[in-house]
Image (cartoon, rainbow, N blue to C red; front, side, top):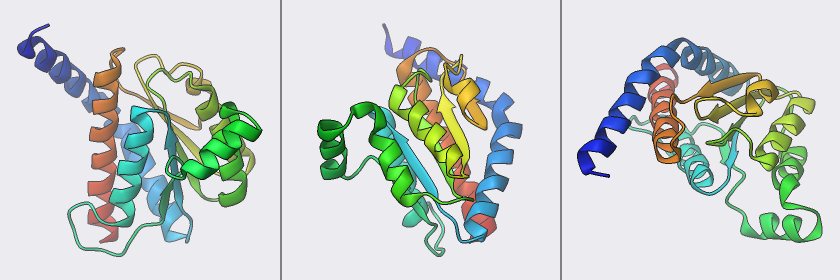
Length: 185
């Protein structure tokens, strides 16, 4: 594959994101209400999606580009002791469930990232979050996978290529951060 081919695939994915603007605007409004009510946003995913969860939680808490008060967010992917203890004592499939049970309350928002939409622990985490009274959001790839039916809102990046989907997740996450900076800053 050539550099130009990769850029073309990236560009095609970005062009496809325009169609998601109405869905993203709904998420922005839900997150504004959540944070304005004193609630928080919980991010989680596996591998590259775990990194994206951490990245977006940091943008909320620290800042995106504008000086503002910190926004209540946490990545459930950062505490290796919790993750490995739970994986060892229970199951990797429920590593997010346990943390959500401990940290989530009604009115919070849980955002699960999965490029395929079929990550068992992300599906389980969103189901547990829903039972706790959270609004659930999934960031997935083109088809949405099982998360399409599990989450209250499923944002499907228009690509089946993992790298392009992850790039789309960050673009959308940054879009959320920018909108929140503007409205909550």
